[in-house]
Image 1 (cartoon, rainbow, N blue to C red):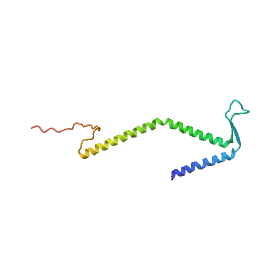
Image 2 (cartoon, rainbow, N blue to C red):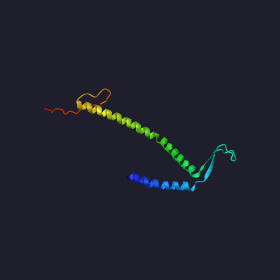
Image 3 (cartoon, rainbow, N blue to C red):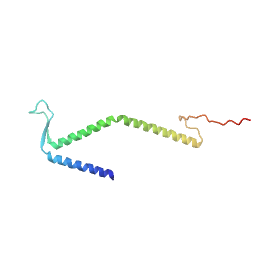
Length: 125
């Protein structure tokens, strides 16, 4: 509930800003990627200024998200390895619990460290 309210509090002002930006910048601009011939460029794209601004913002968000995702790859890999190790240890623990409750020896491949048991010697006569 609080998350929806905070989202509404943040998104409503952003929507108002974007709509006012779009209404204020309706004039068209020509975008050319030909640096050699400004008079007769090879490719010209004409679109409203607000559309260009929105496209640049969206491209920036996508590029930033991809860069962050790539930088965090080592942490995701470490988490996957830790989850796999935890899964293996849980299975080993379950096997040990089952074998100890049934009074059997643990299954083949399960390593159990038997520590020497202390015994009390009989009293000296």
